[in-house]
Length: 248
Image (cartoon, rainbow, N blue to C red; front, side, top):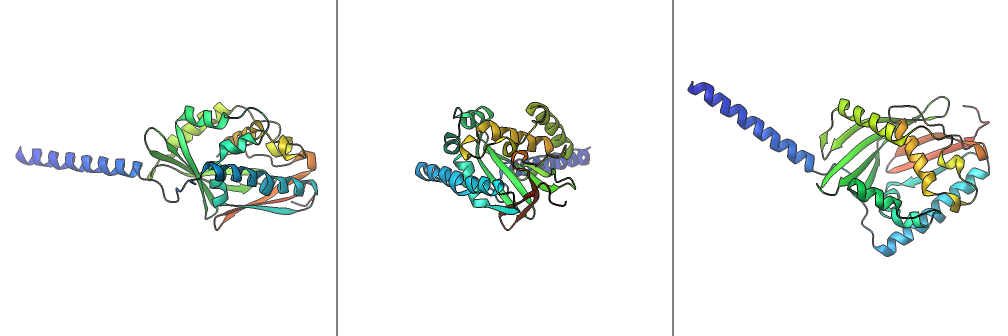
């Protein structure tokens, strides 16, 4: 009887220790989580740099109907995420949607890590201090559609079971609705100022639907261009574009 009680006590102790370790891992930030910390002046500057230094040249190149590449660094992406409100102000339509969404969802401090051919998207739950992350890989189908694969999801440093993540993705796909006929790039006009939060929202919704689901068409119909390739290496994301008449 005494031995049985002692064994039960050891089992209980092991369970308690394991529970504490799991809890600690859940509250630890995942590797690579480093959201940009910007002053208000720097956020305004970053918003202008995105529009004038990244998006405007992208649209100028698209209109030429010649193959080209477009690259953005991890540090730039994280600065853009930190300046989302200021970026939204530079687009047509009502501002404040990004902040209202983040506040309603209880999210803050988004960040991205680009390494080893994948992108890890991370965000902190404001009320709990826990960082949620999803690691995604991107590749092109033979038809030049964009395929998105979920490699891993974590709560802090604790891996979330695949079956649970699949259920969440199904609900998320249902929440974003049916696919739009065009992506933001396809719908936008030649003036960068016409790119609206709604355009970006449609593109993000398409990417969400594509996670372990239907690939996203990448043709920019207005300019007869398409995304030909995507590469993530050394902290940089590079997109390659080509005319739709180019061989696949």
